[in-house]
Image 1 (cartoon, rainbow, N blue to C red):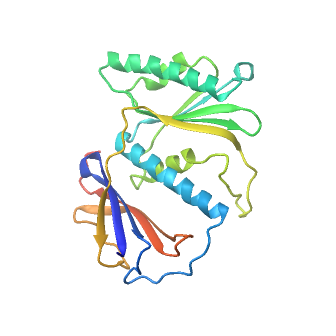
Image 2: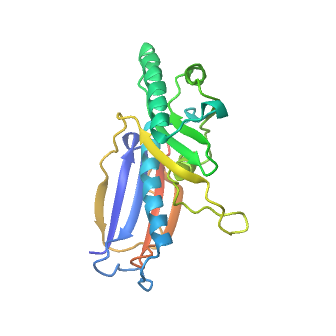
Image 3: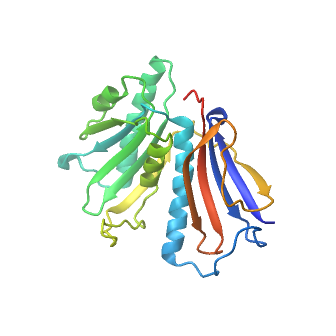
Length: 253
């Protein structure tokens, strides 16, 4: 069977998010397999986190762009909620108010939110939200429990750089292992978390193709450039996989 290429066409084909991997049934022509081993619990946590991050990134690339907002909502100590349900209800109330405001401007609201409770008991919420010019002030006006910090998603050198970083952050949960600068594991910082997004953000259907062999080097499709690239080994099968993003040179986004 060999090598499989799976990709998503985003923003009308202006962004291609591509993954290439061995299907695990037969040897991949042109690529040597590493010794197969039983994956550790840490290996599987990394794979699961990577899978979450990739799907989050695809949604972010499809529905958000430069100038949209990365928002952090916090609580003053007096307003700290007792549980996750309370926070979720408060966020739902906030987003209903914003949706009503967006409709006045004949705009559609898109958002991706993550609720976190830290190991020290504090709650905060991160939201990626499309900006219509007055979004930051709307948030300040309608969030009555603490502070609002809004940062515009910047125009990085590589288009998906910020979205990859945001997706990696949003994908972390209480099982995630983070490391200090010296390479040693840091103390866990998340006790509880939940991710959710607006219902008007369905994932596009991926496309799939069987490849004759594993190419040692990838070349961008004509009219595109390689914006990001990563290659690694699957801890379970021992085979290589890679993922990369192609961006159209004359994109309109």
